[in-house]
Every structure is written in C-alpha cells, then in structure tokens.
Image (cartoon, rainbow, N blue to C red):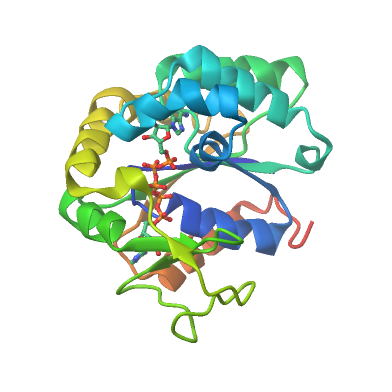
Length: 225
Ligand code: AP5
C-alpha cells in the first residue's frame, strides 16, 4: 500500500504518519525530516529556503525521493508526508512509480482551518533524541518532560515554527501545493487511486480512527504488513 498524507503545515501529517507507520508497517517518507537531517552539503543548500518558509527546488527534493523509494524498506509500501508539494513533484512521482510497476493507492487529505494551524504549529515540540512529536496543549508526553518513546528528557522546537514563518508557509501551501489536490481528485476512481477527505480539526485519535476506517473499507491493506 502506497499513500500520500496531504495537507497544510500543521495539519497533522507527521502525527498521523507516525501512527500509520506503526500500525501498517509501512516506510515513512517525511521530506521535511529528510531535509532537516540532510548531510552538510545538502543542508547548506536547502536551509535558506526552509528558514524563509519557501519550498526547496523541485529537482532537489525529487532526487531525494527517487533514491528513497528505491530502498528496500519501501518495497512493502510507504507513506509520503510532505511530498508532493508542486505539480512537477506530483508528475515526477507518477513517473517514478510507473517505471517500477507501482502505483498510489490513497491520497488522504487532512483539512484544517488556517487559524487552527497557527495554534498547532507554534505549540509543537519534539524529542531531541528520537524525534517523537508533541504539543503544548494537544499532545503532552504521558509523563511531563519525559519522551513516551525513548524516555529522553531533551526537547526541541523547529526554527521555521515562528509565527511569521508559519504565515509564509501557509501562503506557499495555498499558492503552490493545494492546487495539486485537483490533479489527484481528477485521477481518483479512474484506476487504483482512492481519494479520502478527512476533517483534520478532530482530535488526533479521532482523525486516526477516520483514516483507519476509510482504509479498512477500501480493503487494500493488511494490518501490520
Ligand atoms: P515539513 O517538515 O514537511 O513541514 P510542513 O508540511 O509545513 O508540515 P508540518 O511538519 O509543519 O506539519 P504536519 O502536517 O506534519 O503536522 P504535525 O503532525 O507536526 O516541511 C518543512 C519545510 O521543508 C518546508 O517549508 C519546505 O521548505 C521544505 N520541504 C519539505 N518538503 C518539501 C517538498 N516536497 N518540496 C519542497 N520543499 C519541501 O502536527 C502539528 C502539531 O499539531 C503537533 O504538535 C501535533 O501534536 C499537533 N496535532 C496534530 N494533529 C492534531 C489534531 N488532530 N488535533 C490537535 N493537535 C494536533
């Protein structure tokens, strides 16, 4: 099963990707995380774009995804979180999958109002050791100050989660990324692709429940691989 988690910054793509990865034993391909942990030469190239809330150039991110999809752990299926973000990326993905005899099974859109997104992003923090994601209000660690996943006690906040950068990221999403939803809506139902619209304003567990129910209904999946 290959799927895209689609939505604006802060919609919950990373949160749901983590949960779905565990439940369905899929590879998680989060382009933001890949860029943040890139080797120094690449990190230097992309840092300026990310700090300003702009997209990194298509050719850079397409090359990264192309190499990643070829890795062994993607053979059983993958979750794309943060890719594609432009029509050129969507077309490149289609070409890559086609060349390998693969296809997309689901595009899952997480829909959330802009005002709520700002609240979510500015309250977000993550474990400095394992990267598990949390929120000041909506998702605290079970024991305050201790990561649920690895028991580390250090946490970090992203540089691009400042209010002014978030506004730019949202503007870029609406201008460059949201329009490709039409590309996927047009394809849905014609072949293997199913388009699932989810109310991302719901609490985290409810969003997961809605996604699970939709995936189970489509019956293309085998839980835990
Ligand atoms: P990236 O890291 O992908 O950031 P993003 O898309 O802006 O998404 P976020 O990670 O901010 O949000 P999310 O939807 O994952 O939400 P999360 O689950 O964390 O990209 C960063 C930058 O990298 C880009 O600006 C660009 O420069 C570059 N880049 C990346 N991919 C690229 C590409 N393909 N092309 C070009 N450039 C690219 O949730 C947010 C918070 O809300 C969390 O604290 C969470 O706990 C909480 N939360 C989640 N769901 C809920 C809920 N249902 N209710 C309440 N709280 C919730």
